[in-house]
Image 1 (cartoon, helix red, strand yellow):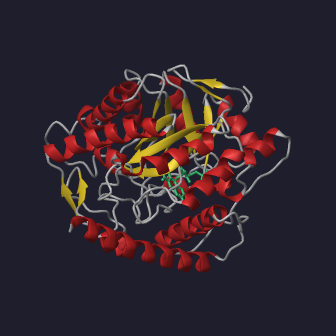
Image 2 (cartoon, rainbow, N blue to C red):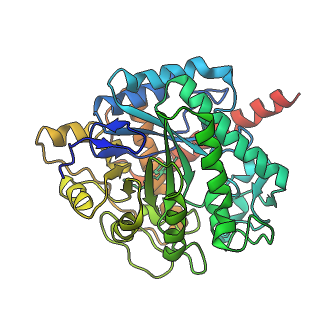
Amino acid sequence: MSPFEALQLPNGQVLANRIAKAAMEENMADARQAPSRELKQLYKAWADGEPGLLLTGNVMIDRRAMTGPGGVALEDEQHLASFREWADIARAKGVHFWVQLNHPGRQTMANLGQQALAPSAVALDLGGFSKMFAKPKAMTEDDINDVIQRFATSARLAEQAGFTGVQIHAAHGYLLSQFLSPLSNQRTDRWGGSLENRARLLVEVITAVRASVSPGFCVAVKLNSADFQRGGFDAADARAVVELLNTLPVDLLELSGGSYEAPAMQGEARDGRTLAREAYFLEMASELAAIATMPVMVTGGIRRLPVVQQVLDSGIAMAGIATALTLEPQLIKHWREGRDLNPQLQPIRWKRKPLASLATMAVVREQLRRLSRGRLPNPSVAPLLALVRDQWFIARRTRQYRAAMTQSSQ
Ligand SMILES: Cc1cc2nc3c(=O)[nH]c(=O)nc-3n(C[C@H](O)[C@H](O)[C@H](O)COP(=O)(O)O)c2cc1C
């Protein structure tokens, strides 16, 4: 199987090749949480690189529940024209462009000033950094139904705007992933306890989303192959969820791993397990792909074409790439033309792991901001400088967000 061979999805849609630009939160919404000019410029750079699939960074289903202060929210028709312009960028190139839909649950910064919702009132444990996150309230049945409806509404709006699919984010410790994990979901009602109960919200969201869009519109899911935390969502849970998803109309299943507490998606396991140096989740993903009836994509630590080939040779339909595409946005096109590129960041080996993790994100986000202004990437930026700049940027966006939310509530 060549990385440049097309892939037909269960709903009949065809992706032009087997490499996707994976979701990366951009924090580049305008003051109304709609797509900005910079955001569109960034996606033009990626669409020009002709990936088989372009995924947005997570787009919020509720502007009160943000993964970051500069995130895009799609909850009503108010800014549909701007979303349409965003979708058109990829459509002009014939590239599939899907919106990743997300709700952060308890992974919400406290300084955004909103009440965080979660399956149970269990706060994030990030040691000395825990206070930076909002204390969550356990969701009521009404809160849960509202979330299901919001996923469905955002998906319908994404289709109306001209996107060709949505990806439901059920990985990385966000709300749907919190419901799946017995550590964060301690409910005793029909939404907690057994795996079937913990997966109920994901199943209901997929069902509601599918019912709100047309059959040719793609519906995908991003799931953890494991949370990499003792007592958390593990490989056996992931297998059981895949069996459940097999009974639903899911067009692509992306596998990743980890959460804010255990950022395995950055290649770090906290449960003592050693992750592979490249394609971190490949072994677990190929086991899951063997039982999945829909095509599977794996993301995490892929930056070389031979590794993409290894992914495909392991029975996986697609490879997702995030970081490497911020260093070389046209990587896929270059590979197809025979150029042997291997864009890579220097690992940050600071003792304080959460800080090193923030710095890694900051270095990547610096590349996103450069690309959004039509500049070239600068992978050799000093991590500390990138971190300071990123914190300044986030603080400014936080002030803007709080002011906008106060204004809209008056
Ligand atoms: C700056 C940044 C933002 C990210 N935002 C998202 C996101 O919005 N949604 C998501 O599912 N994953 C997000 N990720 C994780 C990536 O999709 C991917 O799973 C992870 O970076 C590992 O892939 P890579 O090694 O190719 O970077 C983000 C990663 C980075 C570096």
